[in-house]
Image (cartoon, rainbow, N blue to C red; front, side, top):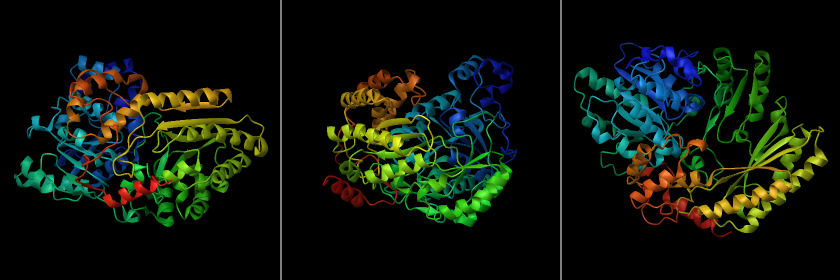
Amino acid sequence: MSFEKIKHHLLTVDKPARYIGGEFNSAKPKKNAPCKFLMCFPDVYDVALSNLGIKILYHLLNEGKNITCEFAFAPWFDMEKLMREHEVELYSLETKTPAKEFDMLGFSLQYELSYTNILYMLDLANIPLRASERNEEFPLIIGGGPCSVNPQPIADFFDLFVIGDGEDVLPKVCEEYTKLKANGTYNKREFLQKISTFEGVFVPSLNQEKIKKAQVKDLDKTYFPTKMIVPNLEVVHNRATLEIFRGCAKGCRFCQAGFIYRPMRMRKVDTLIDLAKRSMSDIGYDEMSLSSLSTCDYPYLRELLQKLKPIAEEKKVSIALPSTRVDSFESEFIDGARKSSLTFAVEAATQRLRDVIRKNITEEDILSSCKKAFESGYSGVKLYFMIGLPTETEEDIKEIITLAKKIKWYYKQYAKNKKPLRLVVSSSVFVPKPFTPFQWEKQLPLDEVIKTQNFLKNELRRLGIKYSYHDAKSSQLEAILCRGGRELSYVIEDAYRNGCCFDSWTDKFQYDKWVEALNKYELGPNELTKEQKGTLAWHNIDVGVPHELLEKEREKARNF
């Protein structure tokens, strides 16, 4: 069971630094803490340590005197083979403690295609997959993150979910556990009944009528770590991150994050400057990202950058602005940045369809922003679209080609440099997500998605424009998993037992095995992708957005 059995074999696996621990700024575990929490992310180290949410909660829990928190991530297949050969269970990075010796395992649920990886990690830890099969000897299994707004498909695997912001409620759950343990009165069922009264806590084994999401009210006063853990190797987002606000005021009808993270809550400029100063000193990255759903919509961005720029220059740190909106792009915001490429989320090429989805931008906004980018020295633009949106027509798809042609012309007219234009058109497939006005809508059938993708690929290739697109089959499975109920737990478990794992990795996705599992339980792939009516699986979850508002927004969309 010990890590010692395999540590001398780690050079035989890819990226052994994923498994050794010892990261800069990692927490020093408290040996005698009454509550031992293992923060789990159901993907590889490189993806996991790019996630801001788990790092905030990791450092926050370790601030508590009665709680110690460590990390565990999904090992890649070569490491899994080594662990199984030597009978080594899933362990924590910091102390190499077996996962099942912790009091709680908290899983971050960021995307539906990671669900089999949750079972994979429980299996590697020798923890029974289903909550009903686990007695009090096993740790409590907790879920949280955006996918938990519809916890039903995976509810049978979890003891509880934290729905909404975790900063306030998760420490409360841990402290309640600590109190009962100290009194010698801990009983799993009674504990679950007690914490089910906490805002944002959903316990699948109890009959809770309505669960209101947990919400941080004042982000400016909310904990944010400046001595953040630094990975041992290069990860997906390898930079310091500063969260400037949470939520979004735009209300795009397809966007789940824009609804479930309401209302928009901001940090003050002075607070951000203080956090940035300390982060630059305590972390050591040469790049800092200003993070939010749409950073250019921060109303004090100009003031923030003016104050931040001299500090960053002194520390030799560059500032990155992700999530660029077409209608809020300002070339002055990116002065001094690397003039490589910008990504604009256009979503739809016609004004009618942009009005349908409430994407409040015009073609003039798009071309004006491209003009500013080209005049500022940019030679690359990536345009992000969605296909299969409600009411979409052939004309909406053809206009993607027309818009791309116009942007090529604008580059010839306004480019500051003589580099060739690198124009990329990228498309994803519309997924009807819970708690959006489009939650009831159908998803475009698989054959029609593929037909549209082939059309765009052929037409754009003739123009010398690169086209990238999201896999249609994985998008279909995403829609199924985000809209299903508890009946899907059997499908997910069957898929895992038959070898499905790392489903979000294109080369590992096994669509046929998922279809086989769905058909076994008479839940064909088209059942949950068609238009939905009646009571939805997430009816008892309250994210603060009235059902009536979503219905009204859906009706407005149909009038364009």
